[in-house]
Amino acid sequence: MTLVNFIVVVTFAGLMVVIYLIIQQREERHLRDIPSFYRLKGTVELAVEDGTRIHVAIGRGDVLSPRGAAALVGLSMLREISMVASESDYPPLATAGDGLLGILAQDTMRSTARALNLTRTNADMGRVTGLTPFSYSAGVMPLIFDENVSSNLLIGSFSNEVALITSAGERSQTRTLAGTDNLPGQAILYATAHEPLVGEEMYAGGAYLGAGPMHEASLHTQDVIRWITIGLIIVFSITGLLKGLL
Amino acid sequence: MNRFKFNLRSPVATVVTIAAGGIMLLTYLMDLQNLQTVILDVVMIGAATALVIGVVNLFSVHVNKIRTGDSGAVGSAALVVALVVTFLVTMAEEITTFYPDSLPGADWILNTIQVPVESALMGVMAITLVYAAARLVTLRPNIFSVLFVLTLLLTMIISTQMGLDSGMGQGLRNFLVHGLASGGARGILIGVALGTIATGLRVLMGFDRPYDG
Image 1 (tube, rainbow over the protein chains, first blue to last red):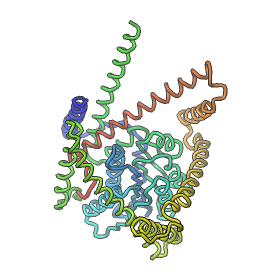
Image 2: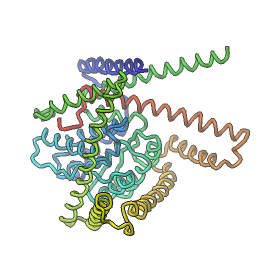
Image 3: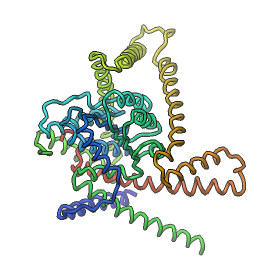
Image 4: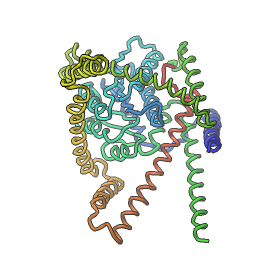
């Protein structure tokens, strides 16, 4: 079992590096259309011009568990949005439902401000709003109304309680783009968010917002591994079927 | 605009992340259970400290709101009072010997205040979901929204088990729940798993730095 794990990880990493090197030599990008991300770019630029704020919710994903990957994607997107919006009068607001994520969100915003040579940074812009699912959502809801928010980006690990956040977005007439790694959460976001991200679409956020060629390379690697997985599933299914018949 | 401006913390943090992540990955691949436990114990202490920092952050944000007379100052005041009272009661109950058993303690606060409040939020969430499902077709008028609502209705009817506990009903239920829903869920989960591996590897290789780097 450990050998299989090792082969998967090494193959994945190797493919990412190879595709990264190929992308470095190419000028054009080959990404399939995910309209939500293009609209998000427009929304961020509009927010800077309008003098409104983007709210980035990175959820409650425990960084020590696999759910932390979703939160890391949220942090990558927070970094990209901060690079565009930090210089405005209303810099982005990040909320988290976990102490560690709150620290990482503040750290991300601080490092972005330093990269942009901004002297003023406000630690209050990275907030922990609650430590249980419902207290987190209850803490986020008033922020959407009170902090001059024009768009909500929910990228991280959210479960059923995310419905409360999206409903607050709906009532305040702000746009919501949202993705989660949680299956019930995805179903709820499909019904309640303006721009839902289904399945692995959320993990593509960095590539679409220009977080670097490695994000793009990992996206292509996921596609390659997915096709291999599909092939293996079909082969094993047919083999199993034939064994049953013979 | 220099996105990767040099500062001393950046390379140190990157080296620590890659080294810790690499060792942790090896413990999974090479069956080094003891080393894994030691690392996880250390990390858990860090995570517990971060939890306390999170509470301090929550407290300071709301104290600032009260001080500046923010529009939500009343709510912030309620939160600060509740936080302080819960903290004092819990500390008095757990650490000191003089806290009388007859007085309400941390369990009482949890069962009498927090659980009912969260249950009420759950009720609000249920109503929100019904409303969202009802207006989904008008929000995004396309075939997938219609399919979503139809599946929702069908699943609800099936879950009531009205006349579906035998024959064709049973077959339909199995096909929907164990066939379509289960297959779709697995497909989505494979995508999520691939995304999770890719994100983890980006951090391990130092391309993603969700810290001051």
